[in-house]
Image (cartoon, rainbow, N blue to C red):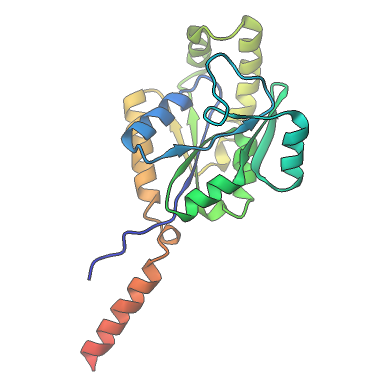
Length: 217
């Protein structure tokens, strides 16, 4: 008799202050397992050059976004830097039920909302810390994507983000990208084996019991 190999999917939540390496680590995780999918968020901000609706984000207006929230169609949502962001619940639920893991790039507010959702038991939350505030600022400046004003706003917001580290399942200090990526992979591999992620275990144990009783008889 072979062991069960079916499982439920995971909601893998990655959070960090801007510049801590979350996006790079998420990319490494998806390179390790190409079956992982990113939760495509809905947002009210305008598309940036090269972004594709439905692939990078679901671009909606504010009225549509708020209507989705009212109807309970958002797993989590937040207001960040003047725009709304949220994760549509239906595709995530479908993925979890079919045994596929979904990655979430959300802040602490999103993590709390997912933790309080009907899919909380299948969530795995990981917070990424920078090695230092000096390094965090250097990474933001080095990206060359934001103005000094935006960088300052992100730095001001970073401590608010970091202050919520204690609510996460795991916390990793990203002082070495390769080592941190390997730790992240190890955490995901282990969590996939959690008892509640394997719905077929109960039937397997029942079969073991039946075999035992037959042999005992």
